[in-house]
Each structure stands twice: as structure tokens, then as C-alpha cells.
Image 1 (cartoon, one colour):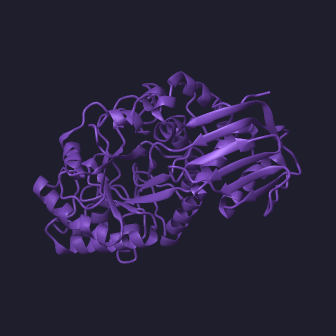
Image 2 (cartoon, helix red, strand yellow):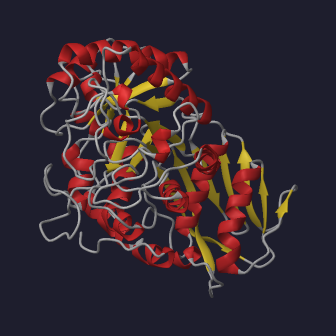
Image 3 (cartoon, rainbow, N blue to C red):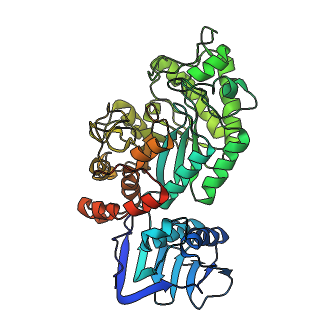
Length: 482
């Protein structure tokens, strides 16, 4: 009989207490009772196809089955406990999010065939014992760049599903850049129709309608993933300038850009139309996004002088606050005047914090860690990787996993969390997303969720290998060497 341990679970739980000699085997007569309608329905949807069992949702405690109970609030709102005995699996949390994460752990304790979309043989056995688990960081993110290459709604939904399986709770969508603008804005319609009609290498590009974007936000929220929209400025704006030349300093529309260079574009800092543009765009994006954050980019603004950059940010950041959102910006935003609660996203090296990060820290910014030489998913694994970049170095799975976020910043710094960005200069298909994301994304997920004391590379590598059959059932084309 298998003993409950962390052999199958990623991210590794905070506490695991096995009960030798005890196991739960899901039977055809099992039922699900849930205090969270969404978590109960989600669990039933995941279990019915591979088991073939009806798994009704019931109001009373089942004689045999699974209970998801809103009780036992812990020290963290996403904390949960999972208890397995011979007749019942019981997951408790003070929040629906905690119940959802407990469900993810339960599914990982079941055989890998639970990921199949058709009926499998079973048996569906869970080892007995208790798990108590909670996240290290509240912000556990991944970024998908849909500007360099556009990816439609179904691809983003699939990405959300896969994030949520590893307890990642933020999807940062990079919605605008030189190569394409990806969200319809009623007040500025040519942003989508003109600015969205290109991408790296040419082709038709694309954009999300307001309804499609709202649907993505809702879909993600049902899986406890918050979407953070990014409208990058004042640089990375060629697509906007080609749609509305009045936003350019010389009033001339540049041609659509399909290359990969950076630093050549800028909104006009001196024109009032620029700030009307920003206010109206931010207002519409905020209205469509119930989450607390709007990302305003701010990196690689080489065509904007430092003085103009600060002038621009000093006017734009309050517009985000006025729209009821908290500002996130790449860490180059550090020297600009700080809005309350601001988060600076650090994408420099894990070994050498720079002056902009120091400025952000000096102003009391929270720091979101995305060191490019550790968690940039668009970097190649090694020299033989067929897609990806290497300007930040090669990032194999151990490099992505084997570091401690607490050691990058000075003592006392406020670390909001960790985010793994996937830029898409070389990423053209869903299979490309898979190969660069897996298996590094689970490594970053454990980095952000699990206590440092519980993370150990040889152990993680073994647990990660146990997930390969799951990825195969899901059709994930993962990188096989780690």
C-alpha cells in the first residue's frame, strides 16, 4: 500500500503527515459534498471523464466520497488541509481558493490517468493521512506575451487551466507592444483594427474584443487566477502610434513593425492628447478587469529622456489609481514618484540588482521578482533548444528552481511574489508555448508556493518526472531533458 508523502505533489506541501496502512479508494457510489459550488463542480468535472462515475453533488455528508468544507481558516487565506481515511477525503479551507488548491493536491495524489479525457481502468486510490498547506507568496504568476505573436482565446484558456493546476494565481497578459495592440478600446477603435493587424514576422496578428477579454477574465477567475493586463508605455508603442499618429511627437504614423528590436518608440510626453489617450484606455481596461492591478510597463524606454520619463510616469500613475487599481510597472519605474501600493517588477539579473531597483526599494515599493536569468521562460534550456532566446543565458530546470527569492533583495524588502514571463518573439504555436513552459513552470510554481526549507532539487526532480505521464494525457509537448 502506498504511504502518503509528497512523491506526487508539485508544489511540495508545507506539511505531510502519513497514516500507514490507510487508504481511500474512490468507488462508483461516491458522492461529492461541497460548501463551494464552484470547487465541487470543478472536481466533479475533472473526475467524471476518467472514472466514468456519476459523482453526484449532495448536500449531506456522503457515506463514501469527498467533502469540501468552508471551515478551519488558517493563517493564510489560501491555506487548506486535506485528510484521507478509508471512506472519505475531506478538504477544509476558510476560502473557496483554498478549497480549489486542495482539490489540485487531491488530483495529483490520484493516478496520472485522472488527466485522461476518457474512461480509464483505475483503481482510484489515495494514500491515507493529512496534508496542511499554505503558500509562501500571495502573488504567484506567469506572463504570456500576446503582442509579439497573437494567441486566441482558446489558447489563453488552456494556459490558464495549466497555471491553476500548479496553484499559480496570476496571469499577466502583455497586451500591447511595438508589434501589435491586442485589446479593443471603444474610445480608440483603430488601436485594434490597425494596431492589432501585425505581429513578429508579418501575418494578420489579431486582437480580443471587449467581450472576449471579459470572458477570459471570468474564465480565469473561476480557476482563482487573476488577470493582470499590461498596457506598455511610454515605449513599446509603435502599434499605437501607427494607429493614431497624433500620439507621436512628429504626428507621422510609423509603419507596422514586425521585427524584434526594442527602444525605438515613444508616446509624445508633451502633448495633452497623450494623457487623454492614457486616461481613456486605462479607464476602459480597468472597467473590464475586476482584479486589483494594471501593469503600465515602463521598460526599455530608450527613446524617452529620463526627465521626460519621470514627467510621463508622474502624470500616468495617478490615472491608474484614479481608476481604482494598483500600479505595477517594470522596475525601471523605480525612480518615478511612487503611487500607494505600487509594485515594481524586477527583470534584471538575480546576481546584480541595479539602480532602478534600488530606487524602487528606497521608495518602499513592493517587488515582484522575475529575474531574467532564472525565470524567463523564453530563454533556451541549452544551446540545442530549437526556439527561444539566450541574451539572459540558458535556463535549465534546475536553474529555474534552485534559488531563493529572499536572497536577492536586501533584508526587509517587501517581496510580493514571483512571476515567470514568456515573451513570444520566437513562439508561434501552442506547442511552442508548451515546450518553453514545461517543465520550468512547475519549478517556478514550487518556488513561489512552497517553504524554502521543503525545497530540495533531487527530490523535486523525482516528483517532476512523475508528472510526465500527466502531461502526456493532457497533450503537453514538454521539454524532456532535466
